[in-house]
Amino acid sequence: MAALDLTSSSVALTRAICDVHSESGDETTLADAIEAAVSAYPHLEVIRDGDTIVARTNLGRERRVVIAGHIDTVPINANLPVQDREIDGEAFLWGRGTVDMKAGVAVQLKLAAELSAPPVDITWMWYDHEEVDSSLNGLGRLSRNRPDLFAGDFAILGEPSNGEVEGGCNGTLRALVRTDGVRAHSARSWIGENAIHKAAPILARLAEYRAREIEVEGLVYREGLNAVRISGGVAGNVIPDACEVEVNYRFAPSRDAAGAERVVRDVFTGFEVEIVDVAEGARPGLDAALAKEFVDAVGATPKPKYGWTDVARFSALGIPAVNYGPGDPHLAHHDEERVPLAQIDAVESGLRAWLSGS
Image (cartoon, rainbow, N blue to C red; front, side):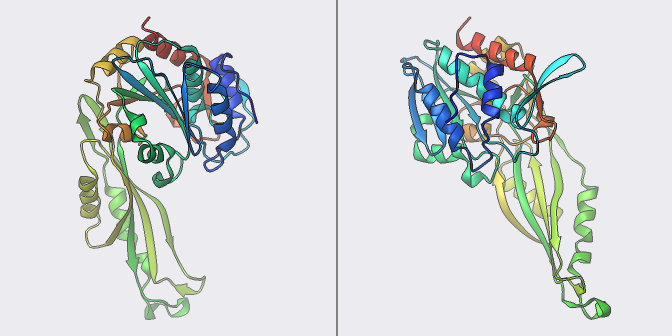
């Protein structure tokens, strides 16, 4: 088992945990290493649920903050082990997970070990299965198995945010829009009905759709409606009798799941539509006292989070939550995934200053 030295720098920790392969479904080795590392610190109570590790202080403080980060990555593509690179004079760590989101996890691990007497109680969560279907999400599983661990007044998720504070998040919905036809030999196509051809209006409506910008509590969220997959066909000489377009709708946190579904069904009136997955977004929650203190402490100007993140899980529990972590979210899942060393240090400094009360 890889050993993690939590007294090393956040940059060194990022290198170490990135080099422990932990694609979704294969997090056990890294979870074991994290559990062993944080268990060495007597100020932390350590709890494990599957490959999710929780470490918390129990100092009897009046307020509690939950700080979380996922330990899984999307598949590796010749971008591990981590490399040190310099681009235009700036130092980077290059490799899978450096952005999404092991640099943020490294910062959290270091501070969890270091901050033995913070002015607020802290619950640290490092969880599995974030990059796959929401039904497998380790944070969701933990909330079902141990809802008591989610008690808190404010939450921070270490998702990449370029070292800035991103409030709330968009919701996300996936739908299947279907057409049907009649099979026939392609040499006698007029005998059948081509289901793929019937999908043309679906694609036309998507091409014509204009993303809306919606202001929620002072932050402007940009929506999007896009085809992400299309399938159909039987054989090279058969007119297809079925076609399916998978559509992803990213919707502002002003809408709930039912409202998002209505938008999608309205766009595709006349077609069979099946909603296969939906996760509501999260309102910014920046008016909460701890949120204001945090934003002031790190000197940030809050921005909206366009992607869906697990802040929505905290928001659903009534806990205001923000995204704050090193790394450019545009490089998440990218083969050129890389994080500036200076950004790792800056996020560490911001969190330490706030959590130590200095």
